[in-house]
Length: 547
Image (cartoon, rainbow, N blue to C red; front, side, top):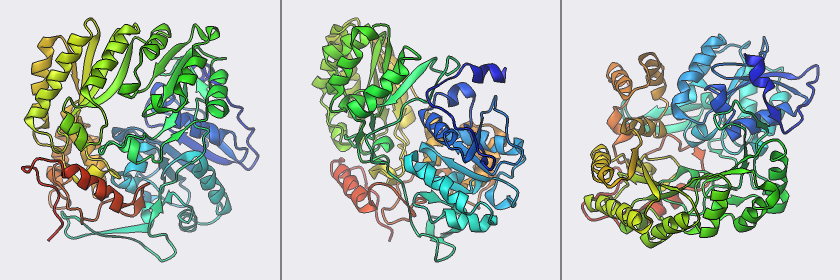
């Protein structure tokens, strides 16, 4: 079974033949193969390692794996989804490696991790990793392997101290966290010795050749899809948005130097093309890219586009997509309230949203999916009425277009201006209210699980004290009830759920990721927070400095 899965892969790169002294490495994705192989980040890192003669890399998923080395020296995990930590711990145990870094001995591999979850806030998971790579893999990965090679024969502690000198490489065990109280805020985060950098800087790749698939397979969750990264980050900078803030600056792939050659490569092996990025249609030459894909020779190509900016939905775009087997478009509107969109810095008006729907229908698309959010800081009940009214107006303006509103709960994210603000306690009720009002209108309302949002908030603002909790919940199962049960069991050794999830934190409080520097300094994030809170109604308090 395993061999047939790997045999179905069509590679778009040439793996190197490993040297006799190559570093035995396992590169894992903590989920099933069909999910992991659909992750562009995982594909690219695996190919980067496989193209090096000095590394012998084997892949590991929860359901299948390639032949694994008996004595791996490096074991890496690509983490795209918070709850996959359960699978990381399970995989470590199956390989007979202690799940906590502190318990590992000289003969155990160095366990490293990377990916969006760990770059955003690695602290809840810090005790399980020897090394965490913060930021873009383009230069960081090679720097990591080269630094490891230089200390390959040294003892473990010497290796870790040497790796910690490389920009973007974070060795959690070399930092000590102190708390005001066992269940209070953080007092200090310091390196354990002077030669360890006090702050680790997330690495940003500044080139204009972005990622593209390195493998295409029918066994992927998106069958036979070839993915091309069109843009990285997003110029909009909505105040809550991790994808924008954490990945700044906004970068675009060169049309002639990156996108067209990549697409030509991919369309030789498949006719399914996915354009990826937080705001694909904001590529400055997007129309030229569409014209390129619209050539008759690509008539059988099925095209899918991640998310598009509302005011770039032209009839022409809709026509091109409809012809390329795309039935619907996805746009993020967040709310139907103009006031709320100003608070979050979403530069968008209701008439533009309605026009996008009209254009989508005129171009032959059959559906439009909108993304909304409840519990946005500063939200009032009348803002929900505005969302209901907006959905009705769209329905009236574009009759026959299938409308879906996917709706999540606001979750505070590290490195964004809203990292200090807690989850709104009314959010669950507000999701139910929207459901009640929109369902009878024939609008498909799809709320994201409120309980999952609570777990997400916990992990997104968590600190190292959560590692005990994560070990416990793994045995209880990953429902919100399990987390509450674990909090009860650990009472008195860490703050309660409210502290992490619902509390507005003081802007003077030391944040769990204070020693990990994202693209913008704290002073800029505070300025953006003030721009937002100045527009709140007086009843909403902004976070107060600690007395």
